[in-house]
Length: 423
Image 1 (cartoon, rainbow, N blue to C red):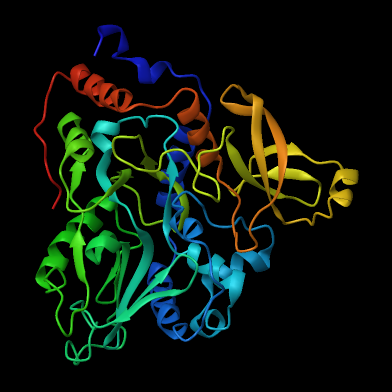
Image 2: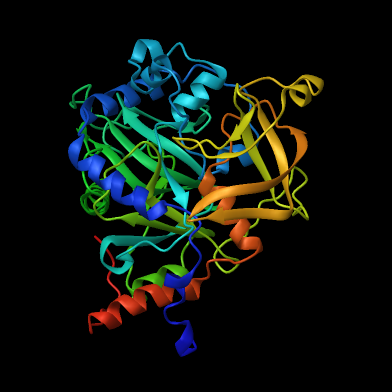
């Protein structure tokens, strides 16, 4: 790497307020501790009670998206859906069920700038390719649900209270909730986070503690063993590294048992925040992912970047963020002629005019209307996804930029560290 490139990450044009929002998220986390035990109990009960429903089919692409954040609370009734009890949640169907389940996962933003103190305050791991899902074991059974609310698998497992032959003396409240990615080729659930263990909620625990418990507690069970009659799928923890130069390089180039789909970064001090959070980030390039640039419905890379935005009642076109970012506006005549409805998700291409930024904020977007999206779509694109995809096509954030950032931090403190696996 050339000497003049060492500090390149710090000279990139400001195109977001991601760092400011990271700081605010940590501040809110310290000031507002919610009733996490109630949240865990509600989720565990709802996952199991909804197992007889058959949600509307959703294309695989919609299930895989990690960047889609939770829906924005525009009205009080909308915000209450996040805290449904089991009776209310069991009545949700279709789009409402999909939205509710999508809001139960912590969804990483796309990395569009390098976090401050990346070396000291962050972990990194190689993200497995596959289906993101919630796994709950309780009352002698185990259920995994995709983000659209549909049951992926209903099976016995070696997780606590996960099979009829195990933990029969356990309390009805002794459930477990794991945040997993199901890897199809080796039929393995790769556990990327632990939300609840034997009824003990980890929502308000730091990532540092959650990852420690994930490795230690999972090892105490037979959940990582090969499949058997009462343990249908294997659960495997993912190697988590401190984000120093050695750890970053190990996550990026290390050999793993699964197909990689980018890198995941977790702030060590972050609690498990449901919905989109800047305290968890995803980053990709061609070396560590097969899918860097978004493809169209036919699997081809379009010549122009395509984005999905939500049509607001004032004609504005916004992202799914809270608060939403406005990319443009449609006039009333066009809305009426095209028979568009407020709240619809519309697809646009970004033209040659591209995106313009002023002081880190979007000023103008050259949007060209393409049409309506699939009806199964439940979210618009997030701002971080749109900007990451735009950067990939024009000025990508490269691995060398990440490495230079952590190397520069180490050089400033005149110390080096060996690769260290967490847990």
